[in-house]
Structures are given as C-alpha cells and as structure tokens.
Length: 273
Image: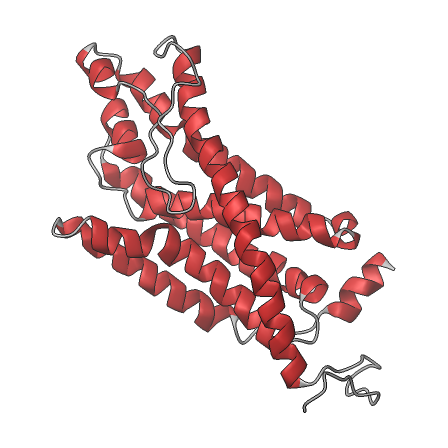
C-alpha cells in the first residue's frame, strides 16, 4: 500500500518536496474546492450583470423596478434577461439610453477586473491567501463575460454589444477592434504578473496544480464562458465561427504562460515576511 509521505531531503532552497503522487492528490482536492467556488462567483457575477442593466434602466426611467429581471440557470448561464424593453426604446428614438443600458454591465466588468488585478499586484494582499484566491477567480469570471460579449459577439445585432452599437449608431468594428486589444492587454497582465503570484501562494512546488489552475482558468475564459456556446448555439449563423477565437485563445494562453510557471515562493515570502 502506497503511503502519502514527504521526503526530508530538500531539492531546492530547503523547501520540503512533495512526491508526484501527493501532487496529484493535492491537485484533485484543490479542484474539488475550486469548482463550487467558481460556480458561486459565476452566479454572483451574473446577478451583478443583470442588475446593472436593470438598475441603469430604472435610473433612466425606462424600467419600473430594478428587480424585474428574468431569472435563469446560474450554472449553465442560460435563461437570464434584464427585462429591458429595447425594442420600445429604439421605436421611441431613445437610442442613447438603449446604448447606455446595453453597455453598462461591460463597463462594470471592466472596473471589477481592473480593481481585482490592482489589488492582487499589491503585496499587502499576499499574506491573505484566501482573499487573493477569491480575487483571482472573481477577475477570471468578469473577464470571461467581457470576452463573451466583446470578442465573441462583437458583431451581433442584439444583446449588449448589438444594442450599444445600434444605439450609438457606430460600426461594430470600433468596439470589436479596440475592445479586443484591451482584452489582450488584460490577459497578458493577469497571466504574466498576477498568475505567477497566485501559483506561488496557492500552488507552490506543485506543477500539476499550477497546470490545473492554468487550464481551468483558460478554459473558463475562452471556452466555457463563450467559445463552446458560440460554436454550438449560434450555428448555422456564420458568426458561430467566432467561437474558434475561443479555441485559439485557450491554446495561446497555455502555450505562452504554461512554460513560465515556476515557484516564486521565496521571492513572495521575502516581500511578506
């Protein structure tokens, strides 16, 4: 019977090295925790998204109550609707109001991602691992929403981006091009700067767990939140091909940032100790 033991002989810098078998066990246990945490944060962000729509519509006197949203499935992210009468707004010529209501959650997601990354890059939070953990996945889910709308549905004639483009009477290329460049920059900062700290704090000396976190987060960003859904739900509309951008994004993140994962524990501990 194989026992889960640690070697007393350090391989690097006096750090106790875990056997690969225990690495696998630890990875499995962490994923069991991550899945419900991720789904809870996902549900929270969905509520924030829909209530941002409805609250802005209510403030603009285009909705009776911000609570009149249509509730859906928080796990599969289907069936949700903000309950805003966009057709009526466009028919009444309230184009800018429709645009503001449509784009408001995207602005909210952008602010949430930016704040989360700024906080994660401040070393005061490195001694608060649980907070860092929640902030990272909160940033992932908010960024997932931005990718779903800006990158995957930038040319849709309805939905958040469609209502914004129509209301502002601008080409969808504007939001798609500049929004995509912004998303690329955020992805590089998130994985290039925040993710190594995440690994050092929450997956030190365990490459299996680091890879699991990388794959899970990239899968959520580019496939779970949008890529797979666009490929299968939008077909046969030609815009289903935008789902391939999700496949490409997933592969690029693994290729660029997988080899760069390493144990930055000593450096992190040096700044927090």
